[in-house]
Amino acid sequence: MTSPTPSSAPNKRQNMLFLMTDQQRIDTLGCYGNTSQHTPNLDRLAARGTTFDRAYTPTAICTPARASLLTGLQPFEHGLLANYEWNSGHREELPDGLPTFSSALIDQGYRLGHVGKWHVGKDRGPEHYGFEGIHLPGALNVFDDPGYEDWLKANDHPDFRISSPVYTTRADGSQGHLIAGVTDQPTEATFEAFLADQTIAKLREFAAGALQGEDGTPFFLSCHIFGPHLPYLIPQQWYDMVDPSTVELPGSFAETFQGKPLIQQAYAEYWSTDCFTVDEWKKLTAVYWGYVSMIDYEVGRILAVLDELGLTDSTAVMFTADHGEFTGAHRLNDKGPAMYEDIYRIPAILALPGEIERREDRFISLLDFTATFHEIAGADASGVQGRSLLPLATGAEVEGWREDILCEFHGHHFPYAQRMLRNKDVKYIANPEGIDEFYDMVADPDELNNVINVPIYRERVSAMRREMYRQLVERGDKFAQWLAFAGDIPANERVRPVTAVERFITQ
Image (cartoon, rainbow, N blue to C red; front, side):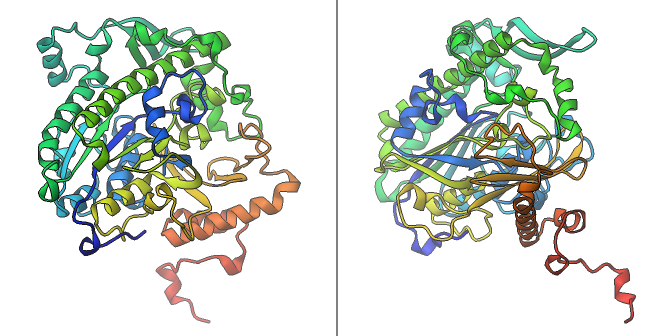
């Protein structure tokens, strides 16, 4: 949670190129085991850097996860707990006065650029936090953005249109959610190509200052792509790129919801996921992979310009996602009140100049990227709730690294509190509004069997619940107050809050 102070920073600091997708499963990438070979550019990036096998988002919802990346704080600390478009009663902007990595980097002389999705609140855009960039509001591709429409006209590209839309079918036979569709555009006219062009233009602009030797101005440039978030709206070339017969669906498609919180079954019904056959799910998964491949193509264009400009040897390149996606796994879609690996585990790659290929299986958090930004810039990261990834990415000896990961959830569409503690062997999920969950991640990696009440797991459940409680208290997360009395936390381990009236009790 600490990094070098400005006075100890090297004279020539690295530039940073941060690439982030929205709602991307790790099994979409070759470097994470996908065998369809549709992500050559990200796989090449992984081959010259460190791939993190146990990377997790602090919460599997866009806005709070992105706010955590910006502030370096856990969601319960920064208070931006939900996406404003689908929730009422939650804060819609970050509180004033919170620390941000952008402020820290500006203080260190960095020039900051942001392209693409922002979604850290409703009205305040990247410019409010010191980035050069245009605010593209909301959760999904802004196909009616004036800048995009002008870009289409300037390049003689056709307008955005959707053909062959794929909808879910509700139980009553009515039309449900839009899941996918073909866009009547070539690849070079997509919104992803538009964002890549903007990123490339910013790279060229920043390069002039960054290449002036010791007196150059280092930069931090982020490209946040809205995809592969559903609906999967892509040109025919990518829609049909992956053969559905080659798709192997996750084992969790066998989900029964037996012995699990009722909300999961309700969410499956909300998304009408059972309306598709196995073959249709294979096609939708293939389309999702095709969307990832199209994004990979645009990432390749950006990285090629980084090479062309001579910046690769002075730029740390990072790739990750804000969270994952179900895509039918556990008979669910999108994300929501179910803390499965599908949506909490995220891809994470860090390629530093001059480093070699590495695999890292220690637990990391999205907030560790925030700490990494600070350390590269030579800024103080003592207030960041994460640790720099540089030691792991350089093969240095690291002591005291976390042995588990604690995540949180506050609701989507409606308030719904959950906490999750996951180590290499097991996962415990506290659900105040339903049965708790406990998964043996070695024997049951698909998380199909909730063994919370199985006698042989009783001691391990208790140990994980107590460890979760200890960490919640240490963080200052008031969810601990529920766990203290709703669980089996021993009386001598409880930290009892003193209420106002208890001051008047006499012995």
